[in-house]
Image (cartoon, rainbow, N blue to C red):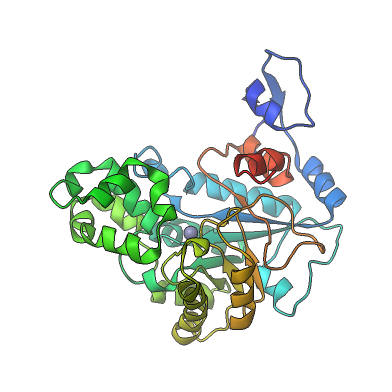
Length: 347
Ligand SMILES: [Zn+2]
């Protein structure tokens, strides 16, 4: 385990049960015994959500999203969870309409969304070395495109305005001005806006950014399946389902499943809602997922999965660059969940 680290009063206040006098920094190290105890009390399953895993030396680059982690962080985090929990594949629990059995053994599942190439380069060897199975949720229409996910493309266009200068449309400028704008658009509108600058972005953005952020190829995904990992759906075009027309919502789910079947020869059972927060999906999408043949779906709403959880609204907790060893432990233990849900407007 990492050495105890000095954390600020602010971080301690996030961890509600830990009370300290105001204005003082305290030494806090929630050990594995505490984590195990917290899991026992809840008797449930925790699902971690990752995106990219970046080379350590690139961590300070402005194009690296804060929801990526470094290779060193990822290794330490995997070693930490492996030291006190059983690491499970979600498909093994939900494939046969089972619910997570209440158990006294802490259980954790590791998942990746979007899956940029850097996760293949840096996370895959660590998972292999430690024998940890993971689930990779992919937007099937973007695989083998050699392009980053839409959110990363917008981020790069904001960072490097010269790239869009000559080709900028009012709509593109608006998307770049306000980062959350692109999340409110239909996928057809967003694709039309990005198509104007697509080629310029790929040729003019820093090479290491494109190499790290571009999404996986089908052949890399094949490799992950061969190594025992699970592949799940994440729509075709990374469409935030609630923003789409009814017909698009259904197509994005059904085609995503058939793409995976046709390309990989496996039947996916899991799905991750793009963005995955409150308001990003609804009962309509659950109906489409069931009809297509999916068995479970994960959100980005923090919490534990228990026998009482809806199988199509499983909670997850997102891990990013800001997770120091101590903060990671607090996050895994669930002590930050209430704050996370408040930030998302959940309660
Ligand atoms: Zn995503």
